[in-house]
Length: 429
Image (tube, rainbow, N blue to C red):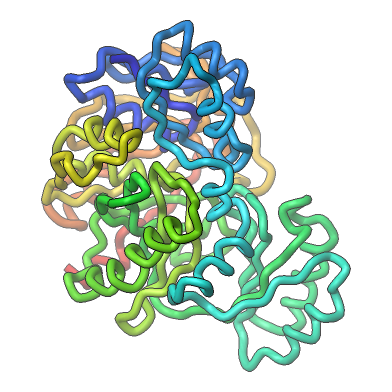
């Protein structure tokens, strides 16, 4: 069969890389894709937010499996529009409907869902732009810093301010209500700050049952030691060594299963990947956020750790037979991903730098492109995060060594990457 993965980032390339390994798949098209290539994959120039264009392309190419990678088309209702096309009635779609995608598209929606279904999360209140004084009063009555301010809508992973003082929080509130994140901050949330260590849990669900994928931890801050501005993610590690059986049992019983039940009770049709951003606070899990798709760059660490064929599980979503498909499992090796970004990211940065990558990809050393264009000997940067190196080995120390050795074989002008990915997890092994 032929598969189509929508998106242009490292997440989409990692998903395509995994799908292309399936004997069930003859070709994987990535639209619009980037300069990275793998066996059985090719790019297509396609506006992934144009439902008519996507539907026409699916029909023309006789695509049987569609995976929607990024959040924008999901929140925009692409899946709903494709499901309404009679000629696509046999298409297998991996991605939730518009209503279901509000789990990520609106933090207010997600927090209300969690409260309704008793899912542990931080205390919060939401405020609109005409409720500035009420929001300021709420901040001033909070017992302690830091203060967490979140834009309600999509903000490319950057719509969160963590303020260490009340004065900083008040300035942050005014900047958000003043347009810092555009219409994404028409409503803002003020949350009690959870403390602990973050981790990511991913499931694939058909709306009735679910399958847990390899766990991961990502690194959002731009600077060493988790300092500086939030980014889309500067690295990831899978599995997470501090997630033991006891903690995972709590995650399943308190978070995953109530979420799947809650979606069904609310008659929300969810079929696709569901991401749980969690805080491990003194051994108890709390939901920081939901995402309606896989994370980036966590996907670049998760996909190489899936042992078997993922495609049968993806195909099972359409008729809700996931529980009857074989679990592909996961390998024992650790995967460590390091992102190479342009200097200046996540703020302003240059584009058009020539990207040079030496060495051949293997099962334990892979370069996943993200913000690249061109091909062959003329690959150029076109995004803040340019590519990610993923390495696999026995344990974090070995995987770190392999990843950074491969990173030394790449270069472009104004290249920046963190040197401490996974370093904080060594003590847990």
